[in-house]
Length: 271
Length: 248
Ligand SMILES: Nc1ncnc2c1ncn2[C@@H]1O[C@H](COP(=O)(O)OP(=O)(O)OP(=O)(O)O)[C@@H](O)[C@H]1O
Ligand SMILES: [Mg+2]
Image (cartoon, rainbow over all chains, first blue to last red; front, side, top):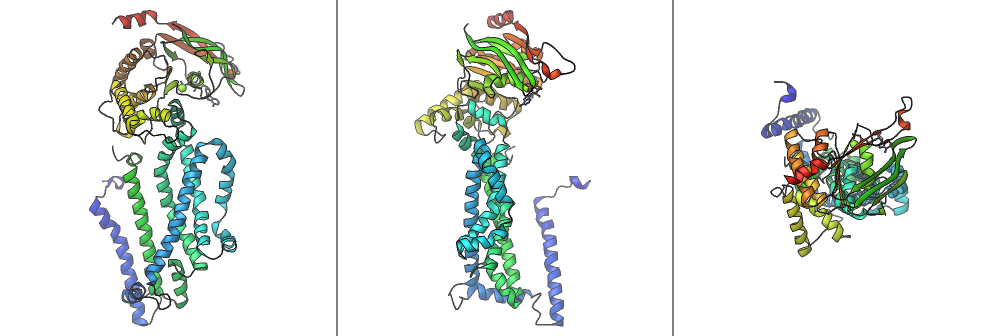
């Protein structure tokens, strides 16, 4: 059978998907073991045992200074910043994106501004944020928002203005006013796209979060990684990176699930 | 019958391209007008004029003796060849939408007894177009013919003064098209509708219409084809046909 026609079943997919990941793990362990055979104190490729040991200290033993469980405190701090940043960006994308997409005068007025902000590299604005908003939480959340909101806004606006003109005409002939076109026609059809936009924005959001935490913070996943880097603590860095990956995957899957659940019409499942 | 819609010396131009020129036309209440003509003649532009999606460059169009504003409104319903229904709403909700827009300007939704009344009215209309058993289907779950039935129900629930159809059955296969012809003829009679339908199917134009209009250019300039616009070149009343169907 030709390769384009070879469908893989559900079980087969899990199996096939696991193969490269397991292979990578295996390669890592073999390399780590061979380095440790030469130098038992090697820090660059720690063995799983060493990772588990240092992580359990962060997971279960309260920090002497703050009395908090470091790993969980880092996770909560990072997720909170990420959540607030994503939340604000999502809200902005919805409100501004809808208005830009549906109302031509709004698009004419604010379209260029949004495009202008979107092309500025957000990291270049980080010093301004730190100067203007201080080194606290606000500037970190602001970096995430500035980094992802313009892209999301433009995505939603483009999606909404690409809705068939016939739909808007139809709504008007049904007696809808501009507001009703927005909330009854554009908004519901923008929602699945919005969830999609959040999924795509998750990657950049993490980048901006870790950057902000690396530069100025006292708690957070990015802060920890950059802190222990000074001691070459790969046994902490690697599990932290894996944990970030896991969190990101979980969020992505949750958003996909939510979209299929809430907007079945947008996924053609009902066919 | 009284005149519902009238065109007085109407021109449509895009830049220096003349699409429709010097159109004078009266459409009676209760008429079923079929519009035929070659592709690009300006049939859809003509419908857009009635719809209010565009205003004429010159001339006046009046509906019930008042000049039309260049904006779509609930007194003129429309069914396009595609994209006439909302993909995110079920058949019932697609149909209720028109009632909700009218009665709930801020929320766009009805609740309680108002909603029940709207549901009842919409269900009745959906039953009339043969979708009584498909109330909870999304458009993606419907065939092309069902989607057009839905689009018709959605427009009719607003009781428009005039119903505009732009190649409504163009994308349907012949068997289903015959069903749709029977449906639209029945609805036209039952609700005393005034219908203007653009079609490429000459048989359809003659079998449904009480009047067939052919839009085309009267004059051709082979060196500058865009200098002349289309107008009504044939205006055929189908009186015998209408009486014949009434006698059925
Ligand atoms: N917005 C516009 N700007 C410029 N020209 C336009 C515009 N809309 C339509 N036209 C032109 O007007 C002419 C008539 O278009 P229209 O869509 O009304 O034709 P039609 O008779 O409906 O054709 P068809 O049978 O293919 O649907 C076409 O030549 C088209 O190129
Ligand atoms: Mg057309």
